[in-house]
Length: 374
Image (cartoon, helix red, strand yellow):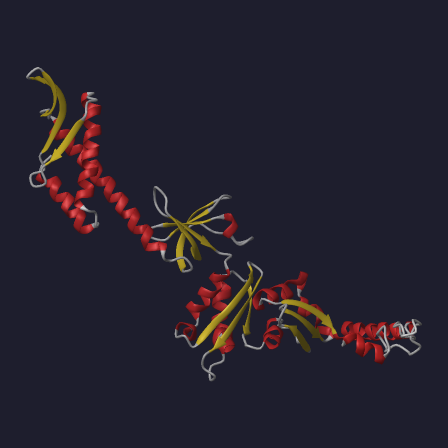
């Protein structure tokens, strides 16, 4: 080994940010293994590398007799042809360290990008996974992150959402998704300048991949319509997102701070007549005109499910006829209970039952009811 190897190590330190001492120690360990492999020597040996000239020396501990005593001494045992072996080993170690440095750099390049959008070229697809070529790295699109029915054709471009970056013994494994709600969010950020500028914000996204998405948006500027900004002139902006999602329907909803109003918006395109909210339980009763019931619920309950996901509220949808019928039945129930309890159930001081009539819907007359509640 010569000075050129030392220069190569110094260059690694400058360009790849690999510490000279670290690589030197790795080289010494590799040379010890190489020495033992070539010369079948199992004794305790040490490698010394001159940091200026690159010259390699091998030392071994030998037991010698001195003044009648056995003494362990370190002696040089460098073979004549060991320089060639050292040069070959150094080359292997340097290449290995370069690969490790590249992998480390690539990992840290993508490690902080979870939640970001990437565009890749589809390289391989089968039942197990699809690979995307991102340029300097590959991304894995596993089956559970693929939209049912989507076809991924070799060589075509595809946008995906980074969900995880895993550190492995080889290249970093970048896992991407086509089903994550965050994909829709990033696509709108890409298409809507008002979102990029911070004028329009995205509050929440609810998605059933391949079928339908609801996205709630708001404006920080009262002069800017958030829904209009996201839809674009003649639907131009939302159409770009729909195209990337290959026809998935998208409802852009205006988010408002009032829960009842937001829930009404979330059930769009259905028209809502009334929303009664229970803020403690986060439950809402929604009343819609009879002809809007099926639209509010949606095919197989999809519209109602997405509205619940979008708002974070449990939503019970009823038609006006259903609500009216419930109210009539409740009135009949109260009236029936009033007729059945014509006499107060309280006992008088004499021990006999009170002869007063009970309050409708209660067990006691007004006198005993106030005492019971008091």
